[in-house]
Length: 265
Image (cartoon, rainbow, N blue to C red; front, side, top):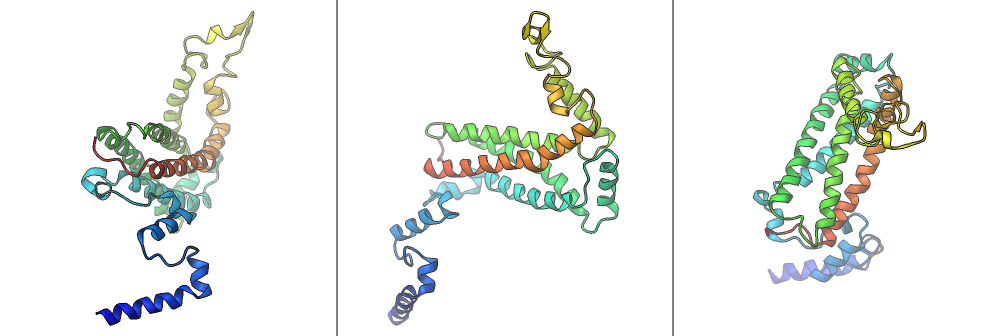
């Protein structure tokens, strides 16, 4: 047994002096806890994760794995969404037909169903993740900033689901966005149908009108048409995913900086 250990150590010593090892392990081959920590801290990917994890952090009955599963589903949605972009045209003329072709004609058209059900699953998982964090008191100091980041990610997830709802361009989507845009038009101060919009005026000039309120900004016009479809498409495929990725990076970084996943409080 001791001979095998010596042979192993001798091989590691020889390998650590090679250029290959120096290129891969800038701090040398890890042999103790400090060296393993340095590898984690100096790696562009690994440094986002905590160096050490408490035992409770890897217990399914405590974490429910909702955070990790939410991130995994986000990756699935990203891959399937990119594939769908090859076959979808965000115009009133082609949008609905392209969705039908994805269901019946396009090879691997099941990607659309994976994307659709994955979107529902991500909303549920993010809600459950926030519920778990709240019930275990993980929002308390020093993690209150990361809790705010999580709330922002929840809102962004809902917006992603909302913007994607219009893209099939069927009656269900159009009327759902009609209801949502009318709710935006009833927003206090910034919606013409909401309270306080008349206060934002200078003499006879109203700053909040049907051509400048929140509803108009959302759908790009007074009625839901091609401008709204294109606007929702850009937000769904480019704008919101980019913002979500930035918030996710900050979220993971704060988990590490705050000492890993919190224990029960």
